[in-house]
Image 1 (cartoon, helix red, strand yellow):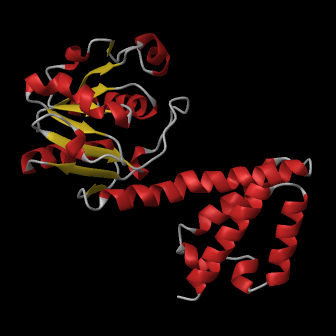
Image 2 (cartoon, helix red, strand yellow):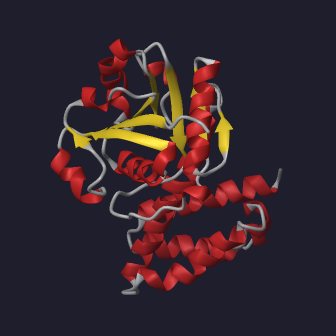
Length: 260
């Protein structure tokens, strides 16, 4: 039987809080050495009483792994705190390479999901974790931890990481922005955005079986230029110019992709 991994979480935002919750669930397989937050009172309500929360980062030691779930701009600065301990530090940012860490033993532990601390339940079995490390032994350590958290474990190189994060931005951030546009359009008519939720659910459900290209529908796919122009005129007449520009850009994208 493997010795339990000792893991500390530095940072108590959305990602750090969910990581701490998950690690605390792993019983004797992982020892959560603590969660560091500059404002412990803010994270305490979101964690079980058994999870140690501290405002002293050194209190996370001793540990085998320190997970840095902090804003990208301070990853390097926070990692320096742990340099004297020669511990493996791994950050959780999809946008930042592991080289931003200022420790000798450095890595990436990137759960590909959008987290909110206010939503306590997450199905970790469905969340892929992308990992990277300088040392092969540290990569194995991160692989072991990722397997314990539950999802598929995928090594990623610094060259691949920007593309991975860009794809995630399309899938999550841009999709949400499009939904925000549809909500604004609905509200100009006095309609509740929730009327679109069955359509949204069906659109996403199809992706369990088919690639997005195979289930693309709408006037751009049909080559229905009159409908496209009607939509654009309607949007512009109501001063929804940002939404009209977005409509045109996405329509052009769909048409170009159909030609390839």
